[in-house]
Image (cartoon, rainbow over the protein chains, first blue to last red):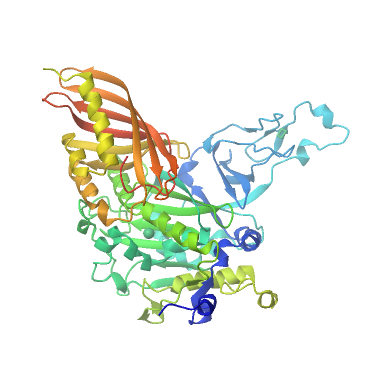
Length: 411
Length: 152
Ligand code: FES
Ligand SMILES: [Fe+2]
């Protein structure tokens, strides 16, 4: 039965944690608050260590509108700085990646070393009277740490350490990352008109596999597809799916997609042929392992409706060219801009956003419940999405189903 | 009669027209047996060459046949090619460099540049008709928005 206007505007008749107000995807004030209360207080994925293997190697990136540069300093530690000159604010390092001896600002040529110290001020006698001295003009360093070769940063000096933040979810990938010496071979970026949470939650919503021809033929046909529980980390808001309850691997039937073969060769250490492991780290980093390759997915929001998704592929350092080629080939079957799934995922997010943007869709329904026993939920349950919004509510001090209700928010 | 430059040029342009029309069967007739097809670029971010598609003849054929099963972008792609150079390599092979612009037109009729790059083709000129024996689509554009289920 079609709904009346009143029904349409009322929250869906499901429990309170089973729906979300679409304003969380579109409201500029909520987005500004997210930057302040959530995105600047959680660990943000920066890059894989193999992107900055040598002293002086750097990557530039942005977070909550702040330009950043991550560099390997001479003591081999990876550091991050706010990439804005202490003089008149120009971006100091302006290229996406490279190697540098020091950082020279192109505006008036102030210079910084790879520890963020200001080492040169052009005609510095002009600062003798009023300052600032070089000692007062270093770059702002941002807390940076590495786990399993994944570099993260956090603006919040008081946040829990990275290892503690990842918590028990490390079980899903720590041993695999320990046994394989990974190296990056693929990176693509996509600007999308959609919200960063919608992108991340598409990665966490296995129900959307019905939307992909690849998944319909290779995953959903596996007899044990529904036997993998979500492992939820309630304290931190992460989740993963890996082995089934009987600890057997979940095996994807790649051969069921026309033109593909099962993944029996080049299997990463710690995985079984065909095995799939998916990890989602709050608030927006996913680490996926599809037998022969690893995908790291992360996004950078530039507002409620502008998200830059960044996708990386990892192979084995030092492997032969033929092996690398095969691994990259398998990676780009499923992931990347010309893959079978990549374009479909972006379209999912953009189409939903189009309806949420001007209020044509008021609520996002996240009520799927598929118990598997032991209090666990099957992959196509929305249990993780509900956990995500529970955590979101904790950081924001507002419930995601009614975030603009000031009365509720004040409590 | 040896294959002329004009025949080679027409081969490249036909590959664009047939892909635009999504007439995949006729498009595949332009390729030699055992061909390979790749989409590649240089990533400024990771400072490495990378391949975004890498398929042999059978894989490419299967991929094209499966396109109707996918949720491909709702609009249409149009390719504009300019053959820049044809270099003959003996009697049997020619290397062809073609500048490529791909436009995307939404179902509402708006058009924008989707990608620019080059075709680097190896053309088999040993028979009556020239055939593409190897195609590398080398992209300048690395940010392709929603991406594409259909190759370039
Ligand atoms: S703004 Fe950097 S030297 Fe002036
Ligand atoms: Fe997907």
